Length: 109
Image 1 (cartoon, helix red, strand yellow):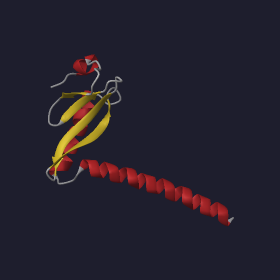
Image 2 (cartoon, helix red, strand yellow):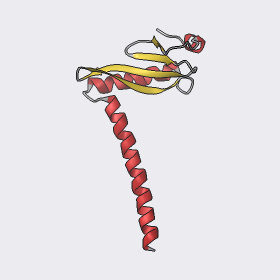
Image 3 (cartoon, one colour):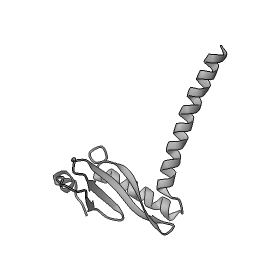
Image 4 (cartoon, one colour):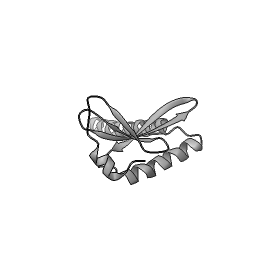
């Protein structure tokens, strides 16, 4: 299991490095120095990943809480990656619809 100090001390290499924590949570360290939390899980017989967030924006403790929530979703039969994509699409549609309605109203006047 990782500690907060270990996460801070990891240095980038020439390749992506994955440092595992527990229950599917891992820290991806990129060559450019970026550190990202990811959750690995299996759904419908396929291995999938969900991006949780950037390290330092999201602490180890918070990443573990989100991991537990994502694990619960998988246990309930929901696909967290698909839900995240759908949420982004919903937001995009809402934004486009709002912009469209404003433009139409403008053109009518």
